[in-house]
Length: 257
Image (tube, rainbow, N blue to C red):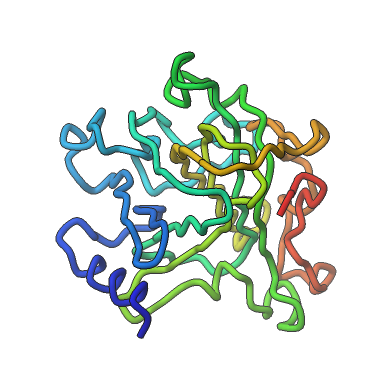
């Protein structure tokens, strides 16, 4: 077993690692440096505003049900923590889920640039006004079958042996250094016509010599990135008419990965 796996397995047995469906922690590097996220199962007064809090508050494991809900950006209530995860462009940021149940639907990771600290950084931004760009996505794994019977990445990243579910995403190597909000989203489509959005956000301090940002055509707003009438959201994956290959490329033109 790798050092990364051993370290995370040890974290899985720690008192803070209570299992629930959501993004609980982040790691950077190998051996991993661990950053604690918000835990709705723990006492809020011991987490809100703490100097170590890198994640925006999500108070429930319940999903966002509407593509037009303002909380689709960073979950509810989305209150910012004051801290930032330091990471170099080109490194992996691993999202740690201690438990994930649903098996069907795409997963995406997004970034949005924030002003410098002197202008409030990510703490002072309105996440609904940020320009988000996609850096990672995965849906139905090619060659595994149709919508209903195929294997989705959402299912592949699950573990049922008590170890954490790990979602590594590489920060683009040439990305411009600065402060960013990172947004991980799991979209579950296992219930007909009732998409379930599970977003969580954290703050990053990205370093490196890069100067790149995507062109404006890549940017999306939340809400606004998804059309609530999009057939890929209003979908019955078990109907005969929908039993076809689907790769979860909901907005491929917005990804710089």
